[in-house]
Length: 184
Image 1 (cartoon, helix red, strand yellow):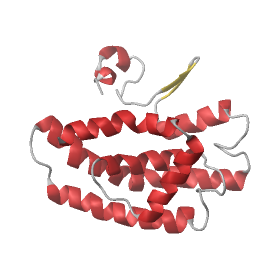
Image 2 (image 1 turned 90 degrees about the vertical axis):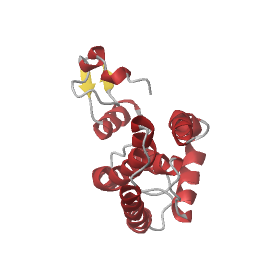
Image 3 (image 1 turned 180 degrees about the vertical axis):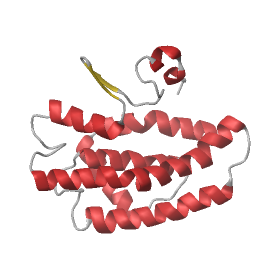
């Protein structure tokens, strides 16, 4: 996190100065879920990550749409208020705000495990999709900030990690070390 996305040169790529960005030839995508859909559709010949079967794809899309105001909103809200803002502003965390995001994350975990997972190992069945990649990232972030995930979500993350392999830890390494730095 060096702030390169805030520089003028990056604003030429994304005028909102936000990450991630997908650039593929002349195509520019500035939203993460749209980028995931594009990358999986364009480059995944197996069809595992963004399945072509309409009913299965609809379940992937359902989670991607739901997570914005649930997993992401409260996972990022927790991390931002517990880790990021105290570090940047050199002040204590607003514990009322952190507590509210924590309560909401408890609800999110319950809804995620009961509705989106149910008896399945992954959101759509036996194999992970882009929905599982995003869910894992969104749960890892508040966890890095000290939020205690419940066993069903921890078990789910272990299944995702087992499917992804060593790259799973590499993807989360910078965020986790940044959180540690901020909280120490």
